[in-house]
Image (tube, rainbow, N blue to C red; front, side):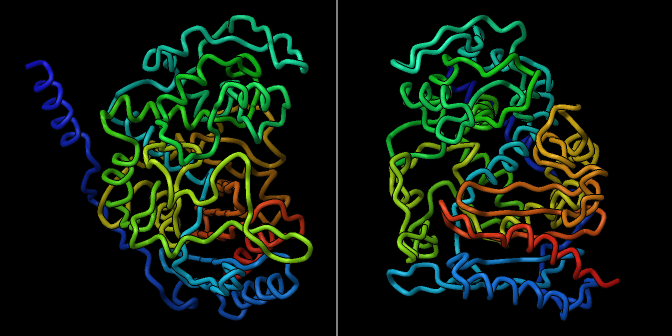
Length: 429
């Protein structure tokens, strides 16, 4: 009887707390002329030229790029060769592993639950995931055998800390501190994704036993905290993270090509990860993860920090929802007031790069960042992914740019900053 009541409660909660119909209705993104969106065709052609030259000069194997303004897609093109083994060229609807671009979607899910009053931002995470109750900070470390000592943290890790990368949790193979790379590897922590039969909950509970870089809230350290929050979404919603994303975010935003594990009908659109060896583009092989993810695998590891694959158009729809203050196509995911909170400076004076701060989902450009130039207006937000994907959105100009490539360990690629700068200079109203 207790089980039946629990299931009924979760069902009713999902019904009450699902995304809501908005009194505003902004249409989905549609392809329109540049002029209709206040953009210059001639100036947008500079993006075409830049990416064409980058492919010809073998700085990148190829890319797919999208620019949208005022809810209208004014540039959506593919460049280069996606797979040099087969000769397959890039297509505008290709699917890419977006890695850390997953983080903003997980943060969105967290804030949707926050809007339902499931928690307060400064609540300790151990209230919901008890394994984090005895958090400790690294003290000494032995490089010989990777043993360490740790001291108790003075403050608990909060949900706000996890959203802002100030929890002190590390990031394994991409951690800037070699000690944590070794500690995470020895503990068997999965940082990006895996084809193994593993759940995110199992990984997070193991992560909770490991030491922190520093006292929670005192420094900015890019971390695996969004995986922890992905598991929090599962705990609070009573559903797997992929199901929450699908029903609460992707279906309302018509993001039909964004998945943790791709359906068979979409697998042939997945772009392989490439690198350059002896002057030739070749498939990238890693000892840390299976590059065949998200096609292969047990299909139950839902990394809130790095697990999704998507298209430029799907991700642009997600960003447009933010530019619309939380609404798209008459469906409201977040309130305008929540968006304002999420875009505010949540880390104070902690450094994370000149001219920007961290909100509750994105890096955000401040006045200094606008003055540096090439990064958009104050309030523009952005991030990228491990496999060379980038995006930005400028609320003042209602401008979106998404550039997706799929490479590792190449040093010649300067298309990211050029794309952002060229998109901004194409504004013509």
